[in-house]
Image (cartoon, rainbow, N blue to C red; front, side, top):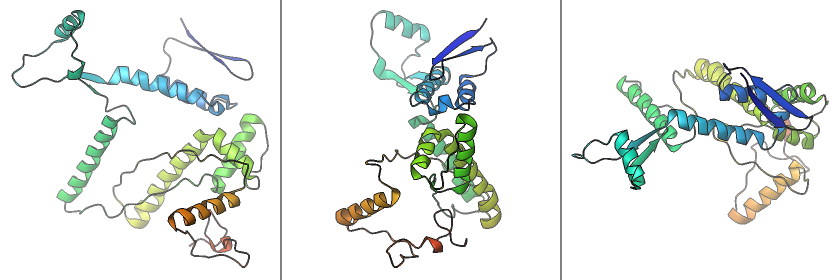
Length: 272
């Protein structure tokens, strides 16, 4: 017995026949996401449809319904609820739905908040004090040289195309948009390496808690280059909020940023 799946896309129909002991839906989606020619990862809709399927499946398997009752009320059994539903009795205002295992839901983040609070209280009780510092980082997806080389190699293996992402900004933007799964995986590994290789041995951090937040995509118009977009944004911020943003290295005689004094990844200067 097999469960056939059909995905019409591009180079003909794509068929998969899983055996009865097939992997989980998450494993199935992970396999297709990294499929050898990258067709599923580049598809604009596929990832959202599959994510919705995974969340709905998890909601049915892991979430629970509870009935709100007052002290002194008789216990309501499942049979009682079924009987009331058969009579047409509406009591949806008394039903509570919990899904703390569903990533991204309010209950999920409430559970993570409780875990973080418990960690802080434990440190305080152990006389180790409050958290020492808070930090935030950004994924410089258009500037990380290792990420550019990774995307160039990935595009070569999946599409058979040679691209130069260091010099072609339009190709770099397209590569990031079509291979967000590779960008996110790279940034996740980079973040974990930073915690293990820098925060722990250099700063002596023993415990930490972090989360990822995904910002909305920045849409480009008119085919402008990055310098022109930066100039437009700077002018808008100055006129709207009287706000300016200048790098400490300053500008050269032509008014361009002194990237020769910036450390990587944005510039070419010597690392600090």
